[in-house]
Amino acid sequence: MKRISLNILALSTVLTAGSALAYSCPTDMKAIDKAMIGSSLSMADMDRVKLLRAKGETLHQSGDHGGSIEALDEVKDLLGI
Image 1 (spheres, rainbow, N blue to C red):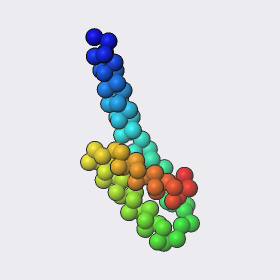
Image 2: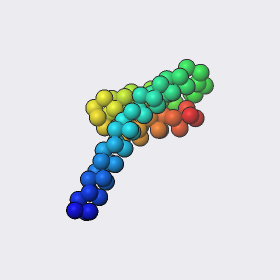
Image 3: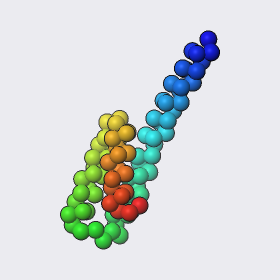
């Protein structure tokens, strides 16, 4: 019985963490959009930022929040945020 309780606790923790990560995507996208406005990146870097930002949003909308966070983290690194 104790083992079943621990498994249920572990599963609920994983599911809760996944939904918490899902909600960080929109916050990251807003921060990226704001940083893009005053950015002095080269045109090539800005094109990469826009591509990855769009990819992150698409992945978020499709439910792939891990992939979205990965793409958005790369954008944040490029923008220095």
